[in-house]
Image 1 (cartoon, rainbow, N blue to C red):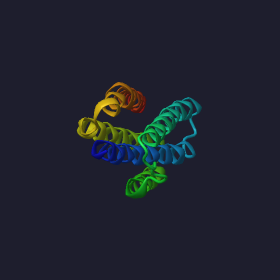
Image 2: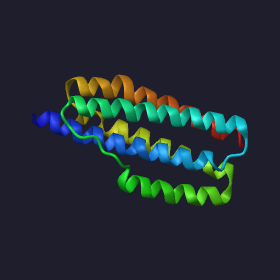
Image 3: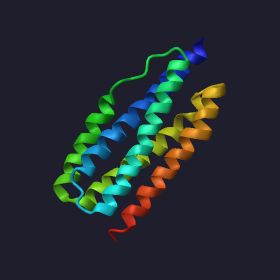
Length: 145
């Protein structure tokens, strides 16, 4: 039971980060005029939405209650994105990459706090998916150089 509670807490932390990512992508997409870049950002947002769904499902299976807001991370993301919006598309993509950096670091730091099936889920589903989204945004940022 203690492991399940700890797993729910860690997964909810990941969930809040994913919810923050979805919010940030939504805001950024509204300010991107280049259709190709907007499409790529929408794909990344959908990746995060899929992780939101799978993390919620896992938390529920563990008997926990999934977080329904991004909390402080969402407020931070809004501030970063507001500054990027004022500076244009390039700054928005850079802000998204910073968010992807933070998300990847969060997974890498906390994945081993999970136990059993939850740890396997983190290592085999969440972390590889985050690495893939991170790489997509990193490559997209290079289009501005």
